[in-house]
Image 1 (cartoon, rainbow, N blue to C red):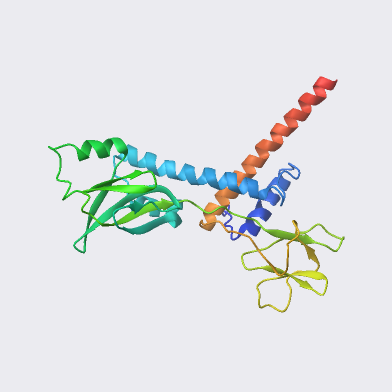
Image 2 (cartoon, one colour):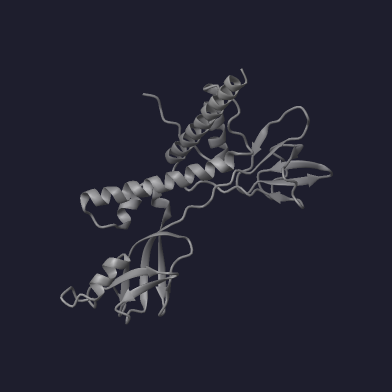
Length: 268
């Protein structure tokens, strides 16, 4: 069985995608100019697919949602906690989905059940139900959480954060002899060395990793620091995202080819 490729940074991902598409002779469907669009689409789809997979599994098993199921998934990097206090509990700005939480009462933590609007109201006004003092509940309302009982002034919320938006920043060979693309990992910078733009691995290096480069769009000033944002996934999951990009590009290439064939037929 062939060993699955495990990718490192976005430069590896770009090279992998370009290589696979070249092997399939699909032409230059993906290039440095459009890779960020495809990266965004693929990572958004990957994140939501993995989330729905976890939720569907819980529904089938009848298991309550919890952080453990996400720690066992590709979304482990996005599990966070927020310590919230005061009468209004502000929802984290990077929230994707609330998982659960605990209420802090007299220094002790007790389970705090997260409910949707319907379940929250049913529990809140059910006089025959469990004691809300012993089994507190909370829900999302606008930009805040609503907690019952209202005497609770401190909670710890477990939630799934939104993923970052990946950015592939790069420069090109400016010698006129090549159109090589040089990926600029986080921390890389371009300096203006007496009229020649050179690429360095960091702000302290004295020796450039590439000489005579050009960046588009033209930076307003130098040194220009890379704007790259790496994927927040394990290497094997980065490969799955890369394969999604290949599939998207291949599908787009087939659509273009079919369009061209139809146009040729209509002109015949």
